[in-house]
Amino acid sequence: MYAVVGCDECQALWIVEGRPDSSQCPRCGKTRKYEKRREFVTTDDEDHAREVRASMLAARQGQDEAFAELDSFAELDAQVDDAGIDDDTYLAESGIDPEAVAEAGERESSGSSSREGIVRDALRELDEPTEDDIVAYASERDVPAEYTRTALQKLVRAGEISESRGTYRLL
Image 1 (tube, rainbow, N blue to C red):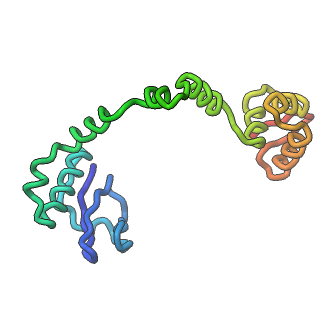
Image 2: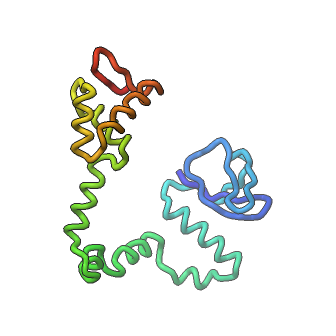
Image 3: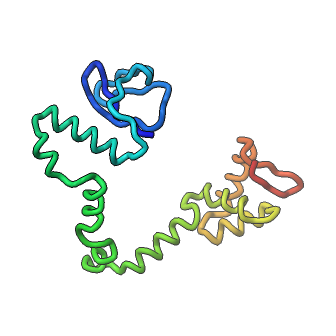
């Protein structure tokens, strides 16, 4: 459910999703209980709420006729999606191989990039990992062995992982 609500202090209009306990005006910052806010329209369609708010703002500025000539928000969104060129064409025209970019993105998103993240990944992915297993896993990902051992000690002291009989696990 979406509602177009207004502020009694500064007359700002905005859209609220659902029925929160309170809401804060995005312009002046005044917080009020939601029940005390004036609801101009309530609808299940976000685009309809956007249309009503835009119509009210246009009417305040005497631009009713200009607003009536505009397409709906759904149609404008579709026009924006169709405008311009797609990412692959842009990259190719800029002299960058789009496939290389996609591969780099996949490599980056496939695991953690921080050293500590790689240590945590080892704890998640390895079955009953020992210190040597974790060090080997991290070393394959260019994390120094000394850093890995220190990180394991810190994580144990912080209570984020446990070590029992030489085997580590996340808590």
